[in-house]
Image (tube, rainbow, N blue to C red; front, side, top):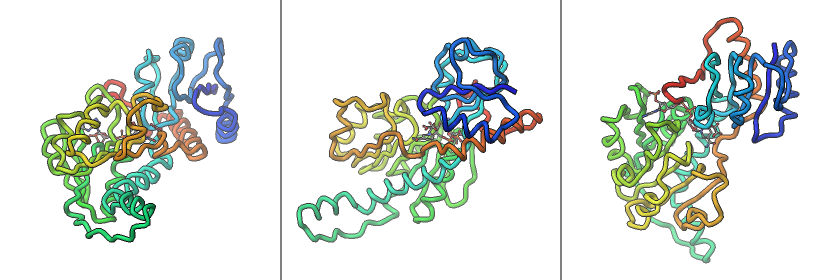
Length: 306
Ligand code: NDP
Ligand code: OXD
């Protein structure tokens, strides 16, 4: 079996060594123009030329959870596409989102500012029931996040495409229940895949439906958010702030207002990192399962877009 590796955002050597150790029966090479045809591919952000030259691939494994960039390419019709399914990202996402929610709810930035000015001031406690958290996307990552939030006893709403019954949360689904979901939420967490249906989903109209003093946490993709609409609603006072990990252009351009806005916290797309060893073990296991003709988790539905 031949495997080709084409990940443009990472040092290939440790990945190649890890994949070779996990799949000693395979010939695994770094892709380069004119490389011989492979059976399987491990990719992240490959150029179109990669698929143009490898039309015979049986399966393509992405080393991330979101496949929006991959699905923009012309893809080999014969191949299955498999994304990472948790692989150590869900607990990281839960940490990141809980941290952002608690930092806002407990006014930790206000205390940091007070302390830096030499002020010893305890603010009145806030009521958790006044800070319902709405999580958009109840997949592998969203479900782990709602589970973590319920441990801190926040009221949690969840919204997905199809109905879900998740203990301890109020579930909403489909376009027809989206406005009710937003109206029931004050803190909004985005964990949707980027698709034609979800592009720009956080805009003036939808964010205006959040409860007053709303807070936005975007950990999915930058193109889910209309940047100017977020800024306008922060200026109007309807929204109190935002924590953003993902952006329309990454790295975030130096002159973008998000860098300097006092109520926006940004991080450089680090909320849930791909963990190499866990990911290699998952990819190797799925590849062997596919060879045995078994179904694997994380199979992408190309038509649906995730
Ligand atoms: P999943 O595919 O497991 O879950 C996607 C969820 O979104 C599902 O619940 C799905 O509904 C829901 N959904 C999809 N389309 C719609 C729609 N039109 N309306 C309502 N709900 C919809 O994805 P993951 O949880 O693994 O990952 C989510 C995203 O997180 C990734 O696509 C990626 O963009 C982002 N990500 C960001 C990272 C970072 O570091 N910032 C790291 C990893 C991922 P249903 O259950 O009904 O299908
Ligand atoms: C992913 C990401 O989709 O890192 O895995 O954003």
